Image 1 (tube, rainbow, N blue to C red):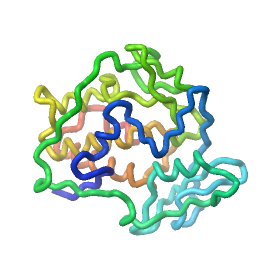
Image 2 (cartoon, rainbow, N blue to C red; image 1 turned 180 degrees about the vertical axis):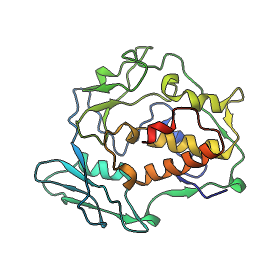
Image 3 (cartoon, rainbow, N blue to C red; image 1 turned 120 degrees about the horizontal axis):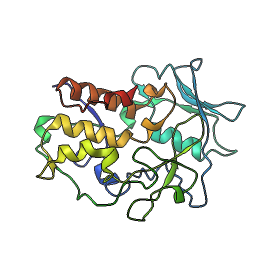
Image 4 (cartoon, helix red, strand yellow; image 1 turned 90 degrees about the vertical axis):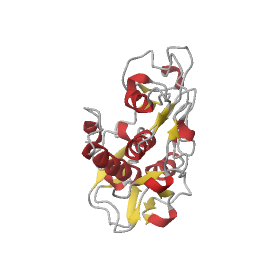
Length: 242
């Protein structure tokens, strides 16, 4: 089986980080009083040493051509740079070598199964069954009257996105189906796919077409191809990557 890139710790991947709120704490600046998200755009004129730049217009330009060979850009790190940008920040975020990133290869010899967390009830959004866009946390009300975070992602329209709880069966029904009655995933291909899917969910809400620059998206594309080849991909999910 081909090697697969998965973002996260080898034994727990990203699932532990996202069990309750799917929160990537290093990049999400959620504010109860409202958020102000930066604007992003694709740029096909940037050199291959650059991941992104800040244009004079105040829009962050992403390198649509991607980084040079063996150099990559993490969406999480790039967005953190954009969200925390100030007068002392560099106006260019450079591509970096792959070996500095937490990329792990899962193989049959290191995998037996992964237990799934307990699924909570009432964790879907009151505002609708799909992705919910937002201006503050108050827009992210769940059926059980709790709220999740309104966060920024890589979009041109500066809209915030409500982070779903992992128990949101409208958005993650395939994951819970994979967990099955035993509450664990025993197939490596299925496990790798869902870890990459969950880790990349926020970036999948982008309205841009140049996210192939990012390592998270590359990982998801690779695992999706293998998952689809194994006839395991639920109908419709592949369209989310286009």
